[in-house]
Image 1 (cartoon, rainbow, N blue to C red):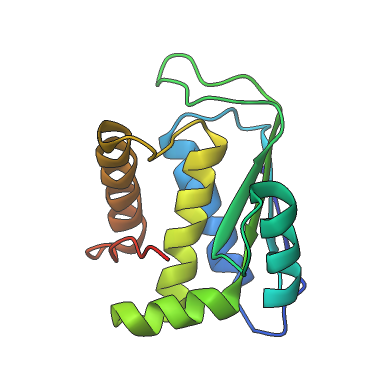
Image 2 (image 1 turned 90 degrees about the horizontal axis):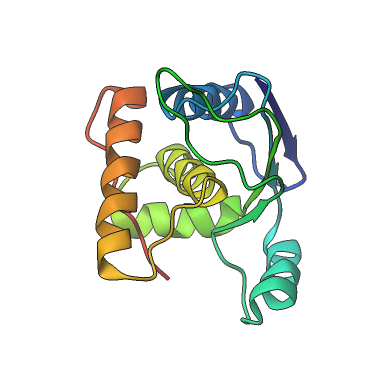
Length: 157
């Protein structure tokens, strides 16, 4: 599994932990071992530009996901096909603000946002109440399994 981390932000982040989380989530969702994932950390100005360009919404956001090959989760007996999963773009500055509001660490918030972004790349969404229950439930389960502790709750802007 190829996971590339590129920190273009001014904030430090634990790249190794983000990569371990990515491998953990993709393994649990039976994504092909040759799948590729890119995680990019950017500052608020860069995130705001992406947010406007792709979502037509002003202001920086916490995470954006850009799927490539539209891979979907596999099963124990049949993993997904190989391919490029896509890019997750994180904004550590926004994550830091959300973490403070939710009373957990910025590192925990980045783990939550990375898991959230991966789930979006794999086709999960939360636009409808049923989708939200499924996606956020899976997100909590994956984070708890990775960290060994209760997962932080989703913060919404």
